[in-house]
Length: 479
Image (cartoon, rainbow, N blue to C red; front, side, top):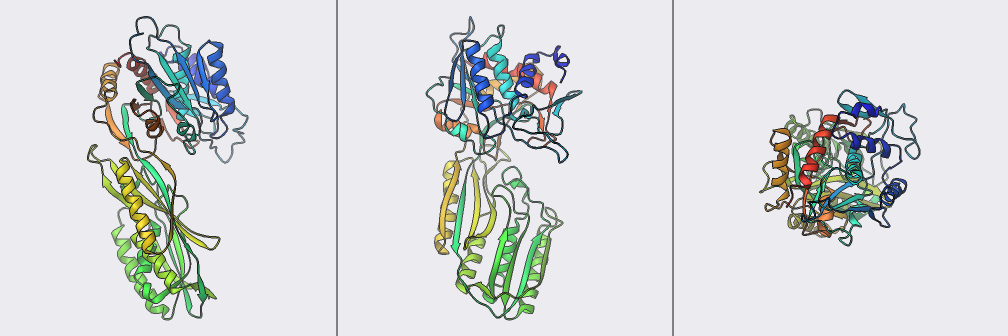
């Protein structure tokens, strides 16, 4: 990347620092080198710095003259990045620098993820800390780790070294859309001990495929079919006449299940096959808009010597029918926002257990708790075991937030355009940080970034320049 291309930009120092950190490996879970770089950066400038056992880094800078009476501001972003590359690339993310490419207004990487998510926040933080002529109140710059995996860095943050009253998270990916709420979530696992009995009946295989799937948070509102739920409906129609021999569906807890299949046994397979195919036609008609390529096949399978007991078969089918899935509640505060959803993500046999993993998201904690209780109740009613894991808190909407209004005013002043206040039905670090900093007013902002988490990731240079100006104006406008 030719840094001369940025000389006429207000954000030229931001891009200089972005180029610097792009030389340093910072894959999620391997942030030690970049974390140490940030510590050295602070010590070289005699700035107060803290590094914790998770390699999170806090750097403090005193207010400039005339701004000492303003409350300190926390600026936060994560130092790690998703490391993906094209099939042809030989890039080694553990040692090779990211090769930056400028194409007009676009900054991208050669055959890899760019790391603007969230390297642009790190670069903006470093530019503020390194500046000698930018007015600002006292700053707490918080760089976290492992955001892209389990948000373990944010989970380790305490309020011990942070004294700001407002937190600006720079991890949004649409300019002019400011986030003020996000979903919390939890994965619930409902498991059955597999008990089998001998089988002498013929077998059928049911396959559900061709579904679009998608992200279980960001695309749950599209009302696409979930293959596990479709399979459950088909099995319920013939529950009294079949035994399950094996069953599975879905691939990831946070992805809408695109496929599922089961092998079943029955005395009268023609009757069962006819009933399933009749219902299959109706289900495909239901989803002809959202999932026009849905395919449901019922075919003879190789004979099986054993199958689930009748009791287990019925309990498994009942659970799939009872398990909540899809959009459950819409937000009453923000129009068009999904408040609460569930996703039947993975149904898998392993070590003589059959487990259904249901991922729940909600921007309201009490609503999240309600859905977990419903699933726990369904598990109890079907004599299955239940546990919840990998929970993360919601960032609930605060109608009295001051920073959201100030941010809109600043954006209008800088761009002459109106900003939008929105929420996202996915997890953000703000949700976790709010637990540690309950009295801190928060907002999430950022420039236009497209294709994040893929080798197609690219950043709008002009948008980053605009949001740099907004950030500088915002931190001195917060009273």
